Image (cartoon, rainbow, N blue to C red; front, top):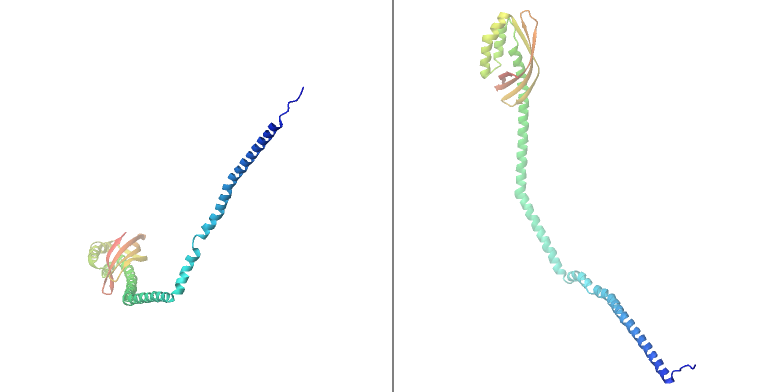
Amino acid sequence: MSKHKMPWGARRRDEAAESSNAETQQTEADVSEKTIEAPTVEASSQEVDAPTSAVEAPPIEETAAAPTVAVADYPEASGDTVAVAAGSTARGGGLWLRVFAYGLLPALVLLLAVAAGFLKFYDINESVNETARIEAVQAAKDGTVKLLSYNADTVEQDLNSARDLLTGDFQDAYTSLINDVVIPGAKEKKISAVANVPAAAAVSANGNEAVVLLFVNQTVVVGQDAPTDTNSVVRAKLEKHGDRWLIAEFEPI
C-alpha cells in the first residue's frame, strides 16, 4: 500500500498560512497588552501629577507674607494707628475719671455718711432699749412683789402703797379690788401673803413701753392653817412716766 504525499507547493502554502496566523495572533496579543497597560500608565501619571498640582496651587507663602510687607513698607501708617488707639484709650480713661470724680464719688461719700448715721442711731437706739429692758424688768419684779404681798395686820397700808406703782385703768381696777375684797377679807380671816419672782424677762422694750413676763410664787396663810403655795406666770405691761416705770396691765397667763 503506497502513502499519499502532499505536493511541495501545497505544503509551502500551508506553512505560510500557519505562519501568518501565528503572527496575527501575536500581534493581537501585543495590541491587547498595550491597550490594557496604556490606561494604567496614564492613570498612574495623572495620580502622581494631581497632588503636585494641588499642593502648588494655593499661594500660601504670599498670603502669609502680605501683612509683613505692608507693615514694613508703611511704618508711618502703623505709627498713626498706634497713636490713634492710644489717644482713644487716654480719652476713655479721662472720661471715666471725670464720671467717677463728679458722679460716683459724691454718691459713695453720701452713702457712707448715711450708713454711718444709721449705725450710730442703731447703736444709740439699742443702748436706750437695753437700758429700758433692765429698768422695766426690775420695776415689774418690785411691783409684783408689792402687789401680791401683805400682812393681815397692815394689809391696808401695804396694798395702798403698792397702788402708787400702777397707772391708768389698771390702777383704778386694783384700787376697787383691794378696797372691796382683799383688805376686808384679810382683816376678817387673818390672811397674809408673801410673793417672790424667781425669774423675769423682757419680751419687748423701748424708751416708753415694755412688756415683761414674770414667774411668780405666792405663799398664802389663812389664820392658823398651813401655808398654800401658788405658782403662776404673769404678763405685765409697763409705761414710763417721767423717770418711773409703772404697771399698766397685769394678766396671769
